[in-house]
Image (cartoon, rainbow, N blue to C red; front, side, top):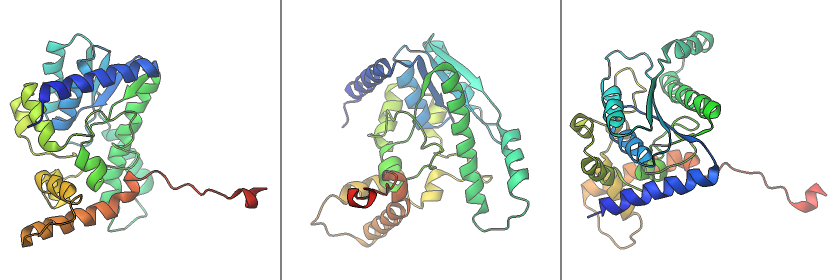
Length: 261
């Protein structure tokens, strides 16, 4: 079992060292009411550096109370935490009015879901630039390095990744240790980018536990799979191959010197 206390202390130490070297004034992090952003924001708050937790709803059909509940939970414990809420619905609708009138495409809903994520990234960096803060990422290991479950230049556009070496199951251990609000611990993970509020696992077509298993088993050469395991592994490989462009560095056209000179 993971040594949660030591892991927490290490992440907080790492954050402190990083911000000192960067000479930034503080941190800013988007909160959704999900377990990843809740755990990350708590760990960031533990550094005692100024920390803005920013809620950014976009066209919410049902009011999500978890972000404000978590913000109050943090503010009660940390004097360095500040809560902001910016409704980005008007900004998103304006973008849609300008761009979507002449488009009929099966990929439109996916494109607009990604726009929501990128609008949030723009907002985080606006405040980060004004205050000279670092934008903190909330992606976990299987999302960021396994299946690429994030929006390129959206929630993938951050300065630092404190929990990206932890799987969802490990983050759940941390949430329990930190006494994160029970509702958040039990809530279905969702990115909040779709009108039907589909969960992350609905989009992935597999549970986080299954994908974590597949990510780990890929390292082993001699292993006999059951039919169910083979199905999970194939799903993982499809997602990994499809999204590898997000996880790899941007391709650089390196021109040979003999051509340049």
